[in-house]
Amino acid sequence: MFENLSDKLDRAFKVLKGQGQITEVNVAETTKEIRRALLDADVNYKTAKTFSDAVKEKAIGQDVLTSVSPSQLFTKITHSELAKLMGGEQVEINLSGDPAVVLIAGLQGSGKTTFSGKLSNLLKTKKKKNPLLVACDVYRPAAIDQLHVLGEQIGVEVYSDKDNKDPVSIAKAAIVYAKSKGFDTVIVDTAGRLAVDAQMMDEIAAVKKAISPSETLFVVDSMTGQDAVNTAKAFNERINFDGVVLTKLDGDTRGGAALSIRSVVDKPIKFVGTGEKMEALDMFYPSRMADRILGMGDVVSLVERAQEQYDEENARRLQKRIAKNQFDFNDFMDQISQIKKMGNMKDLIGMIPGVGKAMKDVDIDDDAFKGIEAMIKSMTPGERSNPKIINGTRRKRIANGSGNSIQELNKLLKQFEQTSKMMKMMGNKQNMAKMMKNMPKMQGGMGGK
Image 1 (cartoon, rainbow, N blue to C red):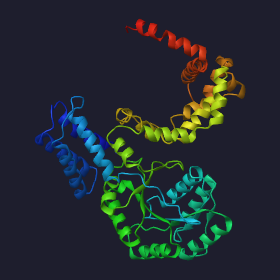
Image 2: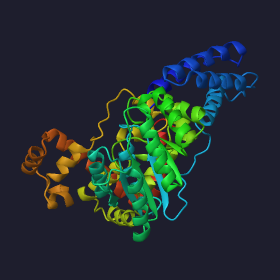
Image 3: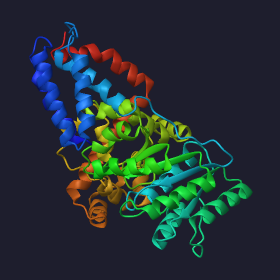
């Protein structure tokens, strides 16, 4: 996400490295590099110029404290302006009404149907809503089928009428159905085209007028750059949407859409999609995105994702098992499952400050745990609960059954044993107290004072 832009901004700030103060000369040089970086990221030219001029104006005349270098101060100013460019504050989705009606619009292939499923899942799991999905793409039967598949996957009902070719009557009938069945939110997935045309605009405008949604969201593929911004402008002029959804931010996106769209259409970005999984949808926080663009990570979002998967009852059960030295491969699999639910691995690693840049050229497979899971699943129930019984014969069987080598299995068993010992020590208060008491001695032995 924004890797090229992050690299180029980092290079721009290096102009100020080693400089004792901020001057008009080095500021002009740095802002020129920033403007070039934004244009390379497919940011709207007018937006890029306005942004770099604002940074330049804020930077000139700034007093540099002795504890802060010019490049650090310039990074702070750029961060502040980036967050402002993307909207400044996070804007919530409007779910007023009984039921609340959310209309989804956008071009074909932008990810509307997938987003509709993700939004339903988010509202159901995080907002404790009872959503109804509505299939109003009357031109593509595959879109209706896809919505039903997604609905079944996340446990959300889908309203559709394949014999009806009028999206307005389908949407109206769906709202009547929702009221009669007790649904509190209706999400209407509409048809798109490969390009903006009058017929599509007339249709989406007619649907909006008929159902008076509390929220109209425009879904756009962030990988299309300035085309996405131009399309957003055309849609906004006709249907006056309330917010933007950027999909495919996990792809090879240059970031132009995310950075330009707010300034061009003056509508907030409300959600970003970062993968194919139904959980891969985040609310958009301008300041956090600025953090990530500047390589500062996003610890707050990482913690939030972890908290969403945190189960207090399971945590208490695991704590007791660790204290009794009963932590086994079944518990290990549970922990892997929770990590996987947090999102794709590269995205998670990118949220850790400093790590994202270091790992940018490393190909991190989203199935990084596949080999480990295969080995654990090849074990018998007895072996999972008591790994000590895994002898040479059993190791050969497990390795062959999982498609891994004995060396890889041995590595897993060794790592598991070390993890178990560490967990046992952390779960034992006396051991922890002893460790803390011996800490000064350990530091002395390592050359500390």
